[in-house]
Length: 525
Image 1 (cartoon, rainbow, N blue to C red):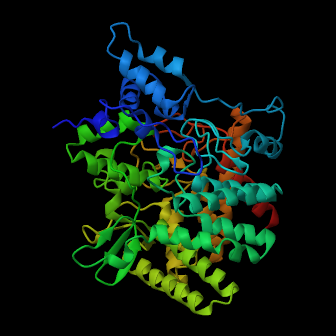
Image 2 (image 1 turned 30 degrees about the vertical axis):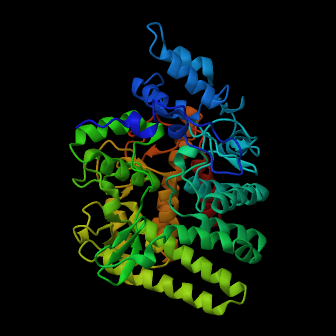
Image 3 (image 1 turned 90 degrees about the vertical axis):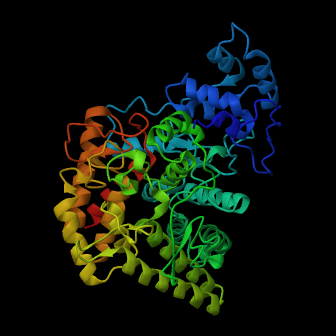
């Protein structure tokens, strides 16, 4: 049975309520504001990129646009693209490059890029952008807003560049969104308000604390606590009969671990046409496919064989059935950081409580996600009570946060060297699916987390090999193209990274950050 998604995302027989431009309240996403117009624009594919329309800025009040659309869409001479161009401004394409790019050193190029990728505090406008009160850095290309986990890796480079105030401004923006929405959205767009991203806020706080001192833990403790509460929503009500709720899962009546989720189960607004087609072709319950797709987007690994039941095709996506290694390692670190904050304020009982939570999570993560046969940490499918068959670089996160013991670290190091290490750095998974978070692609955040994790266990030789190969690849591609890319092909160094739902993007925030940080670390060795 075909589902009417236009009916789900907006009632075509009623006037859509006015867009709430007041930033004091939660703004409506495009699906709520533009309903059937959004559906028609996206499925008609009048733009090459589905993100273009949801980033467009209405020229007049959205309710007026919808009245005009409803009144005219049935006319014989109605042209959808003309209508959209009449009533919307397309998103501004910021220039990326400076005139000296052909002769500038890579480090000088990145220093100039910070200014290009920096945005001032937002002014209030119609549209999907969430207004932020402080300056921030965007990734670049089609990514015109701040993104959650990207920003930590961007901050690593900002710290090397001495841009300490900008780091603090970005942290303040994330704290403001936690205060306003109860969590940090995937990015600062209203169509991201159903999901977050890998919770790197605690790492940002510790980075800022290394610059400003321990008072940062106290200043941001309420926001750390609120983010933790978001990820643990429903945990207290879990039972054997009802063992899942949003982002929490009760395992064997004993442990509560986390999964990725999204509060909505319709097609992603920015990828509506692709999601509708995939769901229909999958032969599965379509709302379930949408939920898995959205949860995969929350993971940041959109998309990867990590989430596929058959390890190969997106149609089998089952993200919400999986306990991810990286997510739970990150929440372990969040628990530890909250404990530091409470200890700093003299609340020793609460500090001990969160230290205890972290230790229980560590025990659970080792129990469910350590594969002794492989000698590697791997995601756990709680529906089938088994490890998935898809090793990935998420398996190094327990080393990044010192969850592994020395024996495990030795085995993980060996597994990485034997399976993931390539001429340009580390591949993301061992599968070749055509998805962008699979082989042969390497991604900046995973190179850094692997480097950091291996260093924690004195695996300096492998860590430095990874860093040298990655830095060299970045430099090689820059010399050839004048660009810093979002991702790289780490196997064939003559080819670009590829796969996924959109063309290769350049700019690029987290690539710049990881390159500068790795280059700095290598120079200090």
